[in-house]
Amino acid sequence: DLRSTLDHIENVYAQFDAESDPNYRFVDDLFNEQYQKEERLGSMIKVFAVIAILIGCLGLIGMVGFIIETKLKEIGVRKVLGASTGSIWMIISNRFMILIGIAFLIGLPLAYWFMNDWLESFVYRTNISIFLIVSPIIAAAILTLLAIAFQTIKATRVNPVECLKDE
Image (cartoon, rainbow, N blue to C red; front, side, top):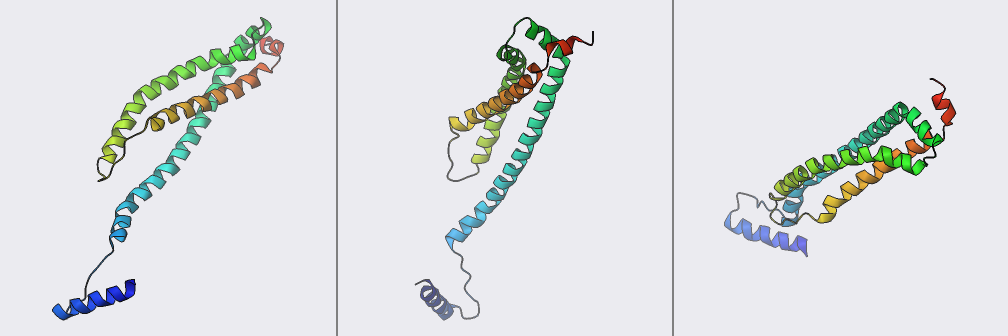
């Protein structure tokens, strides 16, 4: 019975110091206040991460579209010579996968360092799992390969003769 316990504590307190009121707080409220800042930070990071991923995907689609547009004649020649859509996709995706690899070689140690530093401020801390390191690599690679596949399929459906008409 929380209310009667608090009344009893206030009565006992008033016996010793009648002029001031007791000032009490619950420990769970203190913990909640302590971690509210972290929860706000987490929600802000989620929102900005989604925005950054969307902007990155739009930039990736635009860059892949630009590269395919500049190599449209080469793609047409390769199609005439018997190249499959998959082989053209592999040629275009190799360059991007190398760039993703370089980006993760630079970004993952920095992210690990910042996350470790942030976790040091907590009394009870957790270790950073390998899943948190591998999942962004896999997600970025899949998004990149899907964007390249979409643009490559679109480019390989074009009649190769129309690509070569400009010459």
